[in-house]
Length: 360
Image (cartoon, rainbow, N blue to C red; front, side, top):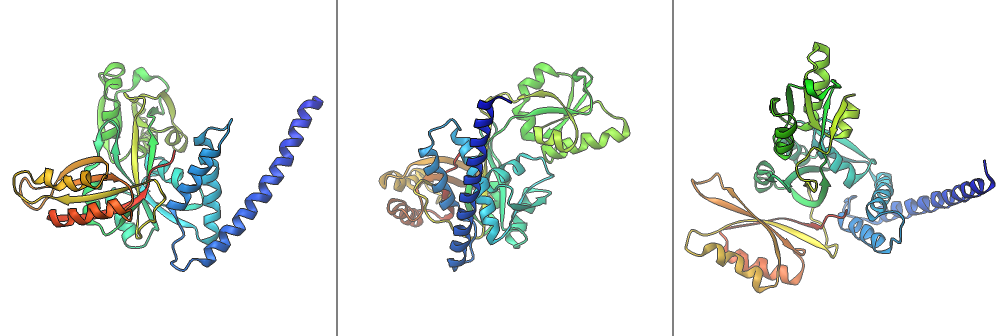
């Protein structure tokens, strides 16, 4: 070993010792802060978002902002666990993108509650069997997840945060020859997100939708025992590792910027972080110009709307509810004023939650 290499490694060892000492000092402070809280809330998404934004603003590299976020999310997750190990519900089995989103937001210092459906995620959090849930709400290619929107309308849970997760699909199989694949399993949205690639590369393969990508990978793993090895799944690299499958092709999504937005759902409101989003659901009165009348307060009070999505109300035929995302926190003066005006104009107005804008 050269003397120069040894010097660099000695410096790294010394820095590691300093980092360890400082991380433990941070953990002691975090535990002390936890003892001063009187509301029992462990997870503070607004505070964590503020920490990550501040660190990213101070980041001089060479680590990317995303790498800095990953490092400090792990630190905060383990500090949080000194107060309590949070339980996080998500759509399973292990290896889904929902699990990836949960890990990105909460880190490894939590326990997983694996659910069989999005409905079950909501029920698990509502009953207190999990502290928080992570559910998909929209994809940049395929649009809104209608079931999640319907459950948000019916549930007493609050939106506590959002997660933006880039989605990179892989074709997985126990087979090694892609030309022998005759059947492809995946979630319906993933099949749609890879539609053109499948048309081009595997036009004759039968496609079948299942409850989740990881479930598809699990099915392929289980099929090996029956020697039916001519099937494949569209899922993540993590699913390939979990179910011991071969990656036959990577990044097969049609849109290279394919991203899914997930929501964190819980039982409490979230304070302002300074860069927030508020989600609403509302209905209009049945009269001409009702929709314009409903949105006018947002414009008048200078509130920017970032999303408008309609869903059947399931109450009366051709009645709709509107899901709206706006910039700002419900405690902001202009947002408060707009909500007060909306309350007088809408036949239904429900604030689903205010929460920090996703940090990469």
